Amino acid sequence: MSAVPSHDELASLGEEELIAYAQGWRARAARGDRSAYGVAHALEVELRRRMRHSALQQLEAKPPEPPRPWWKRWGASR
Image (cartoon, rainbow, N blue to C red):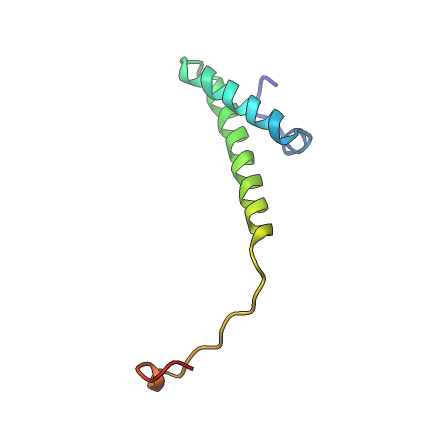
């Protein structure tokens, strides 16, 4: 992978492989390789997207509470 990867290329990578690539490209960018910045950024964006998606899967799906009438704001709780 020498250019900014496409969405299909990123989707084909596993979690560990994606982490390893992201760390490698970020290290190259930190050493001053200007061509590595875009690739490192794309890999890190995909990694954050996957983490966010997996975190959302773990959330409970409960319905929101109905809003309280404004005149009962200071009253006892339901």
